[in-house]
Length: 530
Image (cartoon, rainbow, N blue to C red):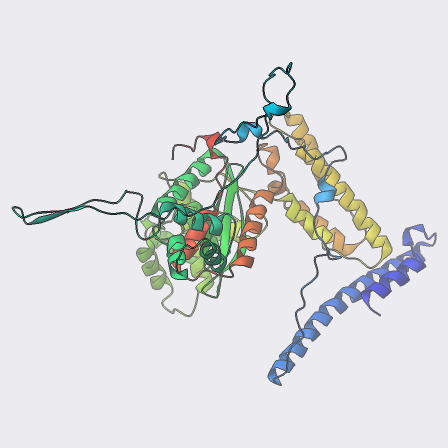
C-alpha cells in the first residue's frame, strides 16, 4: 500500500485518540498511529535507496538507469513556499502608478496638424493634446576614419591623426555596450548575441564577443569593490545566501551578499567558512588573509571541540601573534607533521584564527550582524547572527504526516507559527522594551508546545533552540525577518545558469559576478560618488 492509499484509509477510519474515553485504548491508538507514521517514512526512504541500488546495478550491467524526468510547470504537492501563510489578511498588493510620462525623455516633438481644408471658418485654435509614444531605433553607424598622414623630411618623422579616445579596436563603444547589455541585462547567450548583430550586418566573430564580455573590465571591477564597501557601511547588518554555479564544467558556488541598497555576487570553488570570511573581508581570493591567536581565537577553538592539550600548545607557540598564510602553514606543519592526519583540526585552527583577525581589522568594515539560513559556514563569522524565519518555517512544511490527526496538529501549529511571525513583523524601532519582553515570552510559550506528534515536537524543540538568532530583531529592529533579498539574488544566478551553463575562464567568471551586481538603490546611501 502506497503513501496515498494509507492516507485515504486513515481518513476514512478517522481515528481520534483524544476523543476515546478509555485512556488505555486511546494510548494504544496513539502508539499505533505513530508506528504507521514511522513505517511510512521508513518506506519512503527505502524506496529511494532501492532505486539508487537498482541504478547502480544497471550501470554495472551496462544498462540505462531510471530516467530523471523533470516535473511540469505545475506546483508539486510538496511545495514548501510560505508566502500565502505569511501574508496578513489585510495585505493588498501595492498598485503601481501608471503615470510614467514624467520619467520619459523626450527626444523630439512632432505636431499633428489638422487639415485646414476641413476646418470651418469660425474654428479657433485651442492648444494641443499631448500623447507620448516611446520608440527605439537600432541601426548601424559604421564609420570609416581617414587618419591624415604628414611626413617631415627635415625631422625624418611621420605625423598621423589620432582616433577618438573612445574608439579602441574594430568595434565602437555602441557595439560593446550593446553586447554587454544583451549578455548581462537581457541574459542572452553569446550565440544569440552573434545572431542578433549579424542580422544588422555587424560582422563580428564569436571570439570577439567573448573578449568584449570578459576582457578589459578593470574599471567595472573596481566600481564593484567600491560599491561593496559602501554597501557594507550602509547598514549594521548584511544578508547572505549561496547557490551552485559551474566553471569549466566543475561545481562552484556563488555567494550573494546584500542589504536593501545593493546585491553583490562572488563565485568561488568552495563554500566553506574561510571562503565566506574572505568575501566579507573584501578579499574574495583570500590572498591577504591573516591569522591572529588571541583569547577570542582560543574560545572559538574550545567551541570547535579541540582538545585542551592542542589549545595549550597553540597558546605557547602562537599566542598574540598575527601570521600570514605562509607562516600559518608553517605553524600547522610543525603541529601536524603527518600531512594525512588532523585535516579537520587544521581547518578549525585556521578558521578560529582567521575569524579573530577579521574582528580586529581596521582597514575594512566589519559586519556586526549576519542574516542567513542555518548553514554551518555562516556561523560564528560575526559577533551576532540572525536566522531567517522563512527557512525555519520550511522545515514544518516539509513534514508530511499520513495520519489525519497529526496533519491537523501540524496545520494548527503552523497557523500559530505564522500568527506569531506577523506579530513579530510589527515590531520596529519605536517599539518598547515591554513589547520585546512580551514577544520573547510568547516565543517561549509557543515553542514549548507538546502536540503528541513526535516528529513535530522535535522540530518545535529545534526552533526553540535557535531563539537568540530568530529573535535578533528584538535587539536590532532594522533587521528583516527573512532572507528573501539574498534568495532573489540567488534566483537570478540560477536563471543565468539556465541560459549559460558555465563560464570557461577566470575572467569570464569575474565579469559575470561584476555585471550581475545590483546597486540601483545606492544613491540613497551616498554611493553615487564612488
